[in-house]
Image (cartoon, rainbow, N blue to C red):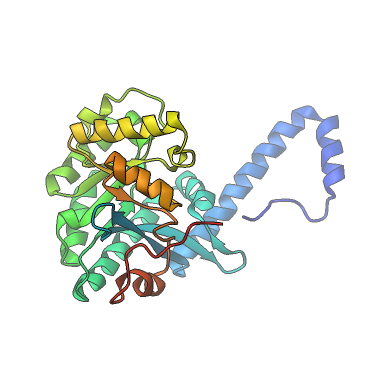
Length: 299
């Protein structure tokens, strides 16, 4: 991320001036924020035009069979000066400057194209992509998804659309309508980062979701009795609602075994494998005679 300092001015002088003129401080801080967003907005537009975004793919593994059932598409930005940038750094800025829709459409099309190539090579798996609330507010989002799937000769249930728990809880009518349209189309809907919303679970019966992804924060201390109880009960609740349960952030064989015993359906995390670009993903998970779980416990 670029900074917005004036290179002709020392940081100490800036601090003294802010202290001496508190009224001016707010105005200058606001200007700096605006310049920062304008700057990254320009860079993000260039990134779209110059094809600087890339997708990495992380496998999701069935706990019972060990078979890979899906790959989650994870966006990265290969910045020409700063190198690889993760989504937590640039996605909020993309939302702020109004580019998240274009980026989200690029992710959808690129992920579907990749799944088409894997399918043509004989690999049976689904693809998962993340949707923002801005995408769900578009009146034509279901038609756009249907057209994209048809373009790449994919079935609707080949696609998993992941939305965060906060979107579910605070979705406006337009977003809820879009989710309903996607569900009627046959797209699988997943709630991502489940357990971080600290709110009523009533939205689970209102939203047409089919998959619950338990947030990685519950897995870190899974050996702890309290965390284990929470995860076990979330799995039981989800199964009562006929939802598939995916647990993120699985890093050790012990965690994997506990989750398997609890009835977790699918796991994702470094034990299985980290996100990889397409060629490396193929070599690690799709090449013949490779076991599904190829990752190692983190040191």
